[in-house]
Length: 338
Image (cartoon, rainbow, N blue to C red; front, side, top):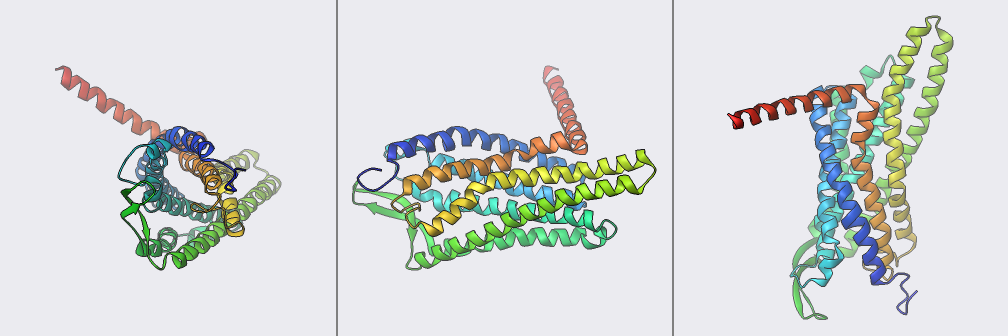
């Protein structure tokens, strides 16, 4: 701890931010952007009438947009920008243009994953009624609700805060920076409370539904083995169920692991007032959240690998798309040669 009471100094913060945001984070984001573009193309090719496809498509869209904002976020937090004499306070500007949108879209992904795990639970517990309960129209309505609910809570922050030219007496410069109104404190309180509850609710539900999914799948598999004499047919049915549900479990488990640091940080912000972006322990805040954002990027980027490894249908569709693109490239090269 230094003389000002901070646990970390500016140099340590800059090292962690440079490593987690600029180097590692940017690499993960670029991979994730390409991966989610492939996911979107594959699910569009397969069709969105299936509930699972529609939900995974919605996740890919939120992950893609979130990663694009995260790229800008990583750029704004580059420590070398602080040393450059630029007319923009990037650390302040990123709050409205990068950090807040990225968190909103990450939370949307969490809510949609919660819906997918709940839907898969129903498919195991109510296999004969699931098609009547989970329809295409209801899925679309629920997905739109997940988007609108999480985005609506960010309207106050953009109505009470804005970007403007601000004078900095310490450096005798005017820079474009984050500017708040008289309602900033109230808006910040509403934002923190809503973010805490929406994040925690989705996180806890994901944990519960994933646990139910694992237990129910295990019991269902054991029951099917003992209830039929047609062993081959039973094993094929169980295997088919396991492929879809296991993929959902893996996706949910990855989300739970990657979102645990962020949810924990939300609790710390409530009980430790100094742990905030502009408070005494701002350096600790930046270091901790650099890891949180990096884990968020991993969660948004790794699904393409999960789908490819665990879904033969996804793998076949992707190979077909890539083969078409490869043939188109050959034709283009042939025309150029002629």
